[in-house]
Image (cartoon, rainbow, N blue to C red; front, side):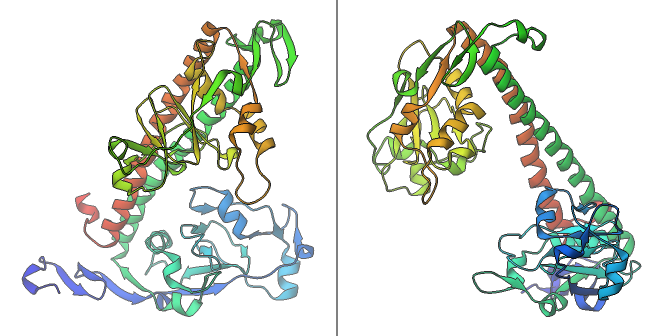
Length: 431
């Protein structure tokens, strides 16, 4: 319980905690209209020339981290809307999934034009923008975990009455605008960083395709490279192609992670690798994770490859001594024919991934075993060429790592600011 002596001047104790004197507390249903969408059949949905965009849950997922819903693949004509008596959702309505909220926890968007929404979505519209700013309302929803207001069950769903009963803190309107502007500024930086990350990933994918087909030659000279057909497609004539098992050793024999020195070494599981990037995050020791089942030991020379869901491209070259999950293979070149960094980069390529996917088990969790991975063929360029290719791709990795680190920092900043601003731990005038 908060003592009166602990309350700063200008603040008061409320059911939502200590808040400024000029902040109000109200039920969401008292300041907004809350309703579900419509179940339009495909026969009612037209092309982009129709008047009203019709948003579905799939549209929520397709726009990434953006908060505005601007366009849809489905539109409905004004004639149909009048015919069936549907009511549109006005601009600045907050939209979120009402079914499967445990899965779609963070999928909340704001409409930028009059629209229709699917019956698996719910819309919340401020009754008066002079009382509650739509953008402030959106950020209020970002503080909520939708599964906390969902009915229990295998497919959680949100009841409109529960949404109406939610308590919302309402600062004075100018402060609402200032809070929303501050948070939106950070979001814009997040979105720009996401764009750079996407562009960097696309650049690397294009460079991989070029380098593993033609070698490290300028694009304009690619046509002059003499190629030969192989088990993995065309490669330069002076390159070899070898079976994986003939050039790469796959670690065997598991260790007990509860014993030293293994318990003190950093551990890598599939969850510690960012898909398709080679980036390793949030490693802890086997002791910290309390691992008790058998794991693999690896050295600074090993590349780590996840055999589970090979389409995710969970590959890392940590260059440290450690342990890894039994769901991963520590890999090491058998001899000097193969450069470890080149092996790491090739395992991240679409060429290798497509070969691995063709082997993956069709039942249960997709995975590839050591016999299957051993049958995949690898390009073996001259060692100097391998090193050139690895250097080019590693430089792109460094750029990607910097942007991923920036995104993580922005995500942390946004979460901290969202909490502190919406609970008045920080007031905009002091930011």
